[in-house]
Length: 436
Image (cartoon, rainbow, N blue to C red; front, side):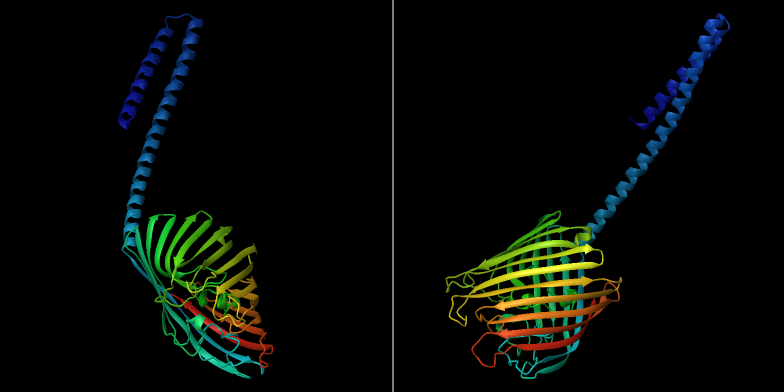
């Protein structure tokens, strides 16, 4: 009912009640005492009803006014939302980070020059590290300058590109050639299609999503990456990916050229594929568990398939304590397995404990293990690798931090070469990371 109709009805009822009260009181003079009392009582009730009706009318007017104000506010919010969505669709967002490393690393007298692969706190693809006998390195490195570009053209279409610039980083991990420096690397470059809020299709080069640790060093709790991250899991792949997000669940499925991080221009004889399934819970989804699997022919020239699996989790049993764990297995079709086997097998895992005693201070402890069974070429030898890290970080704010870490690597090669004795590598480094 319209506001004017309600007011007219209220006034009519009020007029009728007033007339009735007047007539009732007029009748008191000619009625008997008993009847007069009844008429008086009835008149009082009618007056109370009239008062209640008047209050109800006032309340109706107030509610109507509040309803009109609410409708006006909703119209304003809808208009703001449309303007914000239009601005977001037409916006170009730039972000990035800068990380630097300064430190010292030394291998003992039993260390090989390069036969046991990269190791130590500088073993994350930094070029020209001295791994020779009694090798000692003091380094100051610009680890990377990353520039990220996000462009949303519409609700349906977006673009993402991450450009990494580093004068010291060697990205071609499978070749393990630490004499080659890739100064510029296209980490990610995707065109995103968003047919629904819960569904995204990405075409291009993207992060595989494998494993416990992130791709970029500035997102790490510490300075160096684990051995599982260095040798077993794929980092960036090129192909097409579908991502489904429903509540606490995230699932992605992808088909790619290969799983070997060989670069965006490398194609294989047949595609490979992979998937990640992640479940999160708790405040801000700080607790999660993730299962990853990938595999494929990688090359039709060799019959056995390459496949790998990874299970990782991160939990917060207390507000200032974080526990993380990871286990991974990888098996490759390989013409380069040192013992002539048709497959190269790897097994690894790591445990991490991070404590946050104060708001800006973090401490962490990590222990890792890697077993290369067949000298498949990923770690440099058939060997055991056990690594441990201890560190502390200070957060200036959400954008900047400094991290100090000590790391030790124990390697026990299992070849017949007399030089392949167990070896230790020690190192200490300071990382500064700034995001913008």
